[in-house]
Amino acid sequence: MLGKVCLITGATSGIGKATALGLAQTGATVVLVARNAKQGEAIQTEIKQQSGNEAIELLIADLSSQAAIRQLAQDFLAHHQTLHVLINNAGVMMGSRTITVDGIETMLAVNYLAPFLLTNLLLAVIKASSPARIINVASVPVNIRINFADLQATRRYSGFRQYQHTKLALVLFTYELARRLRGTGVTANCLHPGTVGTNILRNPPPLIGLAAKIPIASLVFSSPEKGAETSLYLATAPEVEQVTGKYFRKKKEAHSAKESYDEQVAQRLWEVSEEMTNVAHQNTSSNEPA
Image 1 (cartoon, rainbow, N blue to C red):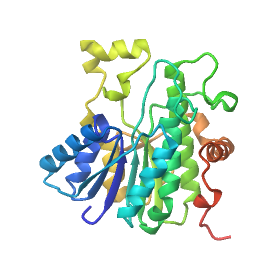
Image 2 (cartoon, helix red, strand yellow):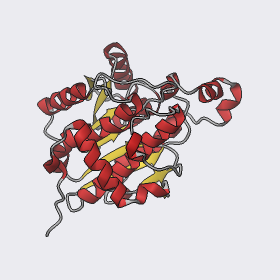
Image 3 (cartoon, rainbow, N blue to C red):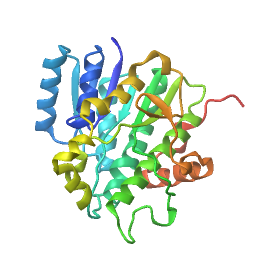
Image 4 (spheres, rainbow, N blue to C red):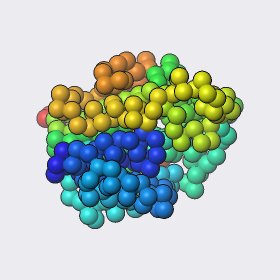
């Protein structure tokens, strides 16, 4: 991975931190995205020391804010002309409904719209860096459907259910992105990292929060290092360089939720997401020959 540039969100704890360290150990230039500058600087120093790699950079952004995401993209592009690996890893789970500065339900904003917006903003440089890889960290497949009438969960809010909806949206986005990127040399894949005890559970629904605190949870929750294995595999393994539009678990292709394979739903979600993020339509036009 020498000479490669990687950017990873949610890089200061859990799976993101473990993934960033793994990338650093390959010799890649790793750009960490953190919400908190002090914490980000500490992790940046730690990864440099543990990996022996000085090419570890830090960008600060609150991914619940679309203005901050746009600034993040500008800051990255001001210093880099290539991006070979983008890992959309950041995620949150909220026990109660909150909204962002943009008036969007927080999990929808961070878990789905942030990856959608950031990927689109960086897509030109990713294409120019081909072969390149986009990796979205999703979750366990659950057979639910996208509720276009209530994407922001204003009715009968369930934190766990809304989390599932946002991760399903991320898988739908991944598959549609892969279709739109055919012929560009850029792949898009997603994964389930396993059930990992990380800071994503910092404000969870009550039952999940309780489960994470009791000793038996160690038998259920994997380590961040274990959870990072599939992300690292998709980012670095030669055998998946041309694999795209797939869902992985434990470094193997797996089946995602039934709804995730519905191309009409994916296309509709893409259009709604463009409206919610004000992303230009031409950013991801297909490069396939007519």
